[in-house]
Length: 128
Image (tube, rainbow, N blue to C red):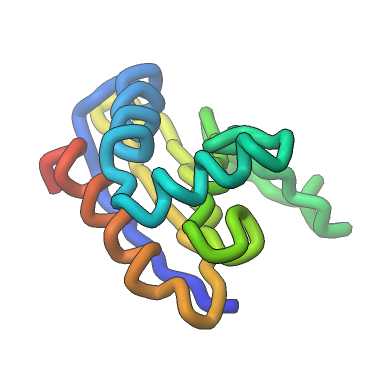
């Protein structure tokens, strides 16, 4: 497994960050991810799997700065659907005058390009 990340500050409100992330993922998928989404649906799943990331660490209760909002999505690829796709998690902290956003992209050994494509879509949607 590999991981790529993106972090930035934005004046957008938390709700708008969520909407832009969702739009970036839905519209930023390439042909392979769209085919993977179709394959996942044919196997009885969803083309995109949205979830709330959970911190199951025994030290999670010590986090004195939890995000105001977090969301995750599994984006499949054509070969192996979700097994070879990319999982992206977005965490947003509300700092009053701005929001701090962190995007983590977890991908398979061969999924680095897929993760980069999705991160580029997020950058474009947020204007960073």
